[in-house]
Length: 113
Length: 110
Image (cartoon, rainbow over the protein chains, first blue to last red):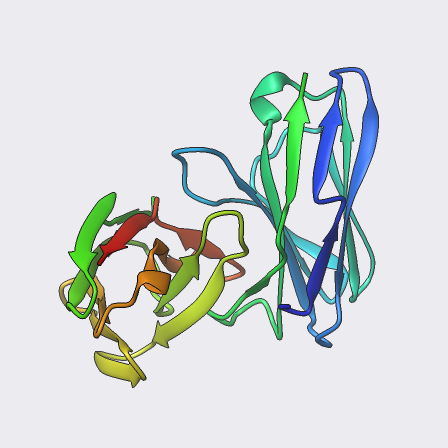
């Protein structure tokens, strides 16, 4: 138990569906992140939020839309995805955005048909 | 740009010592972190080196040489449960998040 909870753990969706991934952290942290982990690729940074403000958008396609309503919750809204978007999506949090210690959730395994 | 290089696979036997190397290229350096990830699990933080030298935490140690843009993770008294992927990571150019290497898969056999 890392203090970062992601739901759903598994998601299968068609290319025309709209779904959302949810992340909640119970650690009182101020920064939250989305990473994508595909087979044989490193963890790829997608978005960074610090104190609910987006501070990094790592050239992510607009079919991925993040939302951070407060410092404890982070969402990733998905629409019109492609099969190559199938991956493990990992949420993480940290005390601040300039620390080297991140706390990761277990991830949401996404399959796009 | 930024890049990190680490071996893709390492194998060892129980009780042995293994060293996983990491070389990095980055325009601004804020330190080197190490993470462990078991199959199907979340990456977990192992160690951080902000300055040159060795940091020891139990069976795991991490070393950094900023002049060589190089670090390593040393795992001693290996156990089967140490079989996992190990990632080194550095801050991105903006200093706002971590960029990870491709990971080293460690297989420990009896």
